[in-house]
Image (cartoon, rainbow, N blue to C red):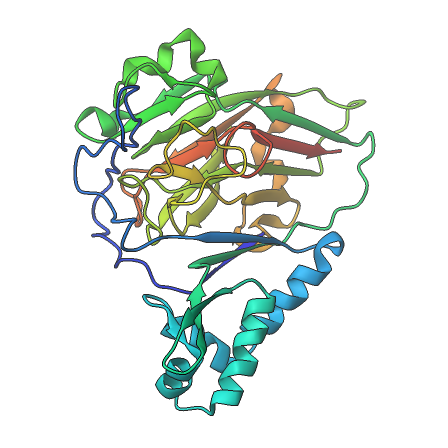
Length: 360
């Protein structure tokens, strides 16, 4: 499960009745700057600096500092005050109508947590400490606590380029789609024929404005037993022009032609490089996603522990074939039809493809 804390609001969401995203962009080899084929988010005047905080025992100190820094309304007001400017301690105190000593104390807590940087500049009398905000978005990664796996759990990590079919009907009348590998674009932009390229199996980022991809995972009955639960996860985000931090998109998962339910991606994350994303892929493009987990068992279906449907494991007929058919995508008639990016093990923030776990 991941939660997104936005210190600064991004642009207002675009119209919800559009199902077509926009094209990710790749710079030409002889370009000096990023390619700019059309209107883009102005990253120079409105930087999107993202910080990831892993919630776990090996990261307790950072988490405590971050939680303390964000646990005060006054400190939140200081971060909002510094959203588009730098200021010294006196200016912050005056702007929030608090004593200078109080402002100095809160600023120290924010600095200890890494939210602020200081620059010492000359003043009329001596020097002044000028504060600048470091982050616009803080993402808390909360891993699920799992029992140790045994032979009763069968896990398959499917490379995202190993799809066996797709349906981009909505894109054929306008929209966007594409794939990139570790070192280059695969095929062409917005070219459905590219999804038949032999090199598609090496894709590390795939995007489309509407439609779905289909995968087939191997299924072997374990001693004649049927699965007790199914779990599927992938690193996903929405698809916008370049990127957009307020861009919800309803992503569905089907297993053996049964829809498990929707997960709404909050954004098309960019502006800060994904931990694994290749350096040649501009930060003006989609960089990383979140990792939702669909789980279906005898009680129903959840995403990250929250109930989304009454679909139960027995309805999936998993033991009827030698494979499990999985479709993942965005329907053209979805309430939030804003496309999808899916990241492979060499892009984004998580070293995985599409992971299917069956517990027997």
